[in-house]
Length: 116
Image (cartoon, rainbow, N blue to C red; front, side):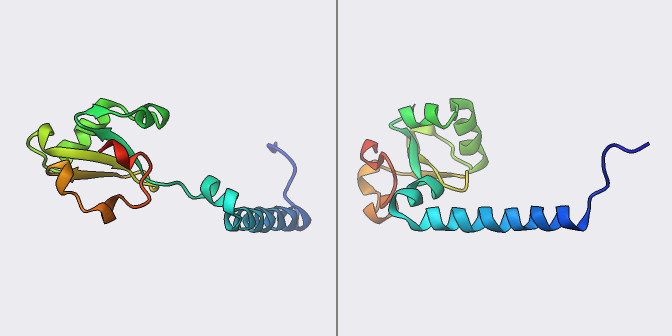
């Protein structure tokens, strides 16, 4: 008894060509100005001044997740955290210290950086 038809060489070639086509299409979209924003995410501020930003809700990030990240990074006091940034790779960057002492170059390209 089989679960379906046996794959053929032609079926494998069609699948491989489909993958190549999809990769080329995404590359073409990413190179266009509008498509780049769609394919490549920007970092975004999800915690500022001790509270979640609206972006945190859009990215389904909870206070519990942020508190866990702070504990994992060894943050002893939440008041020492100027901001938490959700990076394009899904990791959380935690910026500590007074917000007015942050190097502006760290926030270049970060969405909602003005909230800090």
